Image (cartoon, rainbow, N blue to C red):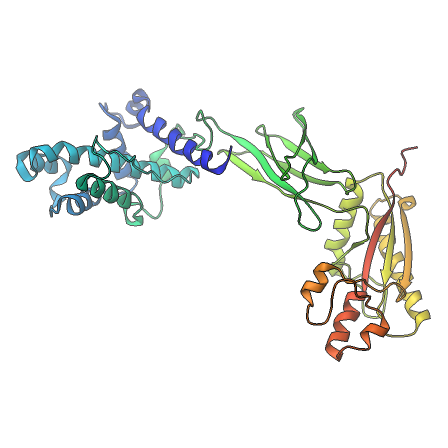
Length: 413
């Protein structure tokens, strides 16, 4: 279902609800007998702080050019109309207009409470008057403007007044008014391009087990059950898996969860942006925690891969010291992973010192377009041709921790 269909469904669900509200329930709610849904709606709006008189005054002024003092109350206003304030052929039209406006405000009120984004719009023909008719067009415009005026709705809506029995707990996004739960999203590669035909697996602790493929544009959508813990896994040939966990516990309204996956290619080293060490040392800093946990998640999502964990330095200092420092830094990360429960057989620490400078990617070239272009090798000879500020940027680029996948069949045979 696309966004247009969803909004149309919201509007249709609200109209159906308003027109077919069970009158017997209304009697129990208020202890009085209602003969029409319109009378009930007015009561609810008044109880919620909506100034119904203000809406009627607005319509009289905008459509008919009449100024009315409605302090006399609704019943007195009805009498005023019947006694000739309006021509007879306009009286019925006004009452019908008022009914549309009041129902529209009620829909807007429900929308604000239950998350429906639909704004009520009157049809092109109102009360059998073509839209091109001057009166019909003016009426249409005035009513729709009235429905969107913030001043007609209270700032804080007491939901206990409008819904003391919980009977309005309908789903504005479902076709039949029932509560509705789903998750949707899109799968991308690490360059931001959509990954179609990706396998999505969803398993719930209620026994749900769903396997599907994304569309060519990478999108997916799966319906869910209430009060269930779910685990999802996205997988695509040539890419690392990625998982996502969530639950639908204790929801009282419909909910559409959203989650996008970004899958990393197996074909090239992956830079770990959030791995930090103390200056000139191999001790991991506290700021590295998020990056390290991210790496643990990757290894957990992909239990059959083995990796080489590599550290690289800049050109500052002598080669031997840089080689030793990078080896110890790589070992620090591996030690952390082993302590976290990752099998040491999956991890190979490797320090490269300054021997493997970065080759400028398209993204780096775009970020530093004034002095880098795609394919440049950021080695000492290249760096020495730059300004002091540009040299420091290149040194930062070369100082990095990476991993590359060396095996995809670990522990399978």
